[in-house]
Length: 260
Image (cartoon, rainbow, N blue to C red):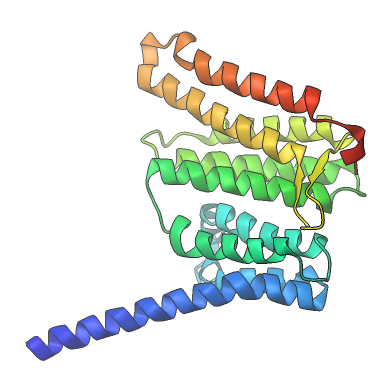
């Protein structure tokens, strides 16, 4: 019996170490292969291969699995695209992206609480919209509108599926449509904040939509919590704070020198 317990513990430790190693290889390898090849395709393929379980099901479960993994896919593909658009030379941003993706895979992604789901969704919104801005910079506005809708839908669904309300189809579509509308309005004036030669470039749109996603979730949670007793004062503080923060960003941090 003792030998069985020891063997079981040894297998658990070994499987944990293998799991950690594979995730580290994915986190580092996805960025590394993108920079070395100067092409995002190998990195994106590596991310998709890591999600092989999506495809290893019957056809009727495929879209359900895909929707359940959208946030993780958005984060992985966005990391690869951000590394690609940073250039083919290694910059500090590439190492930062390796660390971010590794932390996502090992620490953030496995969490399952409502607060963790919110954090995961906000990360997906920020990274996803950042990559979408660079991807669609020289393309038709329809591209970023569709990408923004997908990201808004995925982020909202990821948050709401953790709650007690299972009828959230309309809410997720509304969130996606609002994301798409904001992206369309900002497409013709895409502001990018750059930080010297580090390769760090943060689109203003990514910040705005991340703030909006937080406020949207807070407002909906307050409506569910208070139900018939809901009053606007219950969400007034965060709404005002978010509105003021977005106003400051738009008014004082939209200098044309950042415009792409």
